[in-house]
Length: 312
Ligand code: SF4
Ligand code: ZN
Image 1 (cartoon, rainbow, N blue to C red):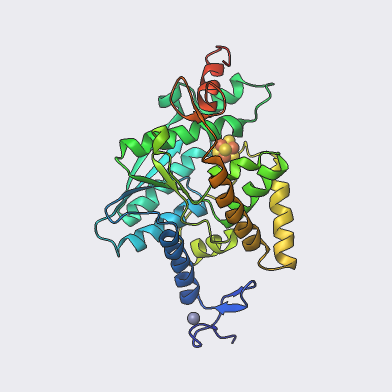
Image 2 (cartoon, rainbow, N blue to C red; image 1 turned 135 degrees about the vertical axis):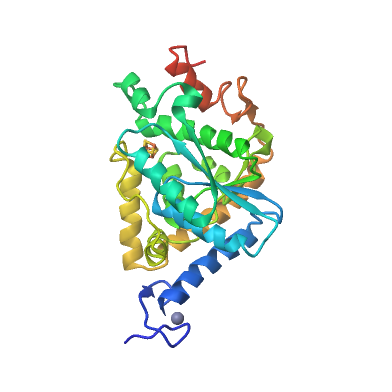
């Protein structure tokens, strides 16, 4: 039997290649939870009396985050937790996710609020895809922008002070490289682990899983018997992100720790960028007040497009 290098007693179930640790189930689970605690503290994500809304999609990341925060929140009796789910209206896919979100929330005694694209915008994502067939934008481009606003609406309805999203370390490293590949490195300044959006009238976003590897989130979900949806969204295409993901995975396998190095480089660049950008004036969308480089923000442009109006 290979013993756990932390407790020295129980059988190891996981080798953490980048640190050389071999961990038993209990020590692994605790190490992930501690990592999240440290991330929360380091980035001052929560105040003691915050109401935290977890954005739950039904996948392993968001449901693990919900379970971890429910546990951590027990140490802070004045904070409270709720969950929000966006039903984009994807037939045969989202219904299952909403069901899983409901089951997990019931298990944890957390209240769940669901908002749908149909109610908010008048169209399901399926209808939007149908309406915009042949256009330049992918379903994810519409979905991403509209969901961001939907989460904000749900968080407001729930009276939340913070929205916690389940982006993990892999997501963050991929996004950083994608911004560079797309020639848009300045975006990195606006994607940190804590994003204060009060100026735009949006609820503050935090990413407590941003320093945990995706495969460790998956193992955490498995070891804690968390039921989650593991079929991909039918619209998830062969996007550039998939290529970046597999490059990073290959590098990590050959050179353990690469993802952490990319992440910490991103953090250094982000801090430097934030300083520079403080002096750059940003415009507000004339329609909704969201910060934008144009006169109308992306969400409003998309909504106008769907209504058949011009883009400007
Ligand atoms: Fe939306 Fe794309 Fe994610 Fe599907 S894969 S839920 S369309 S962003
Ligand atoms: Zn152990």
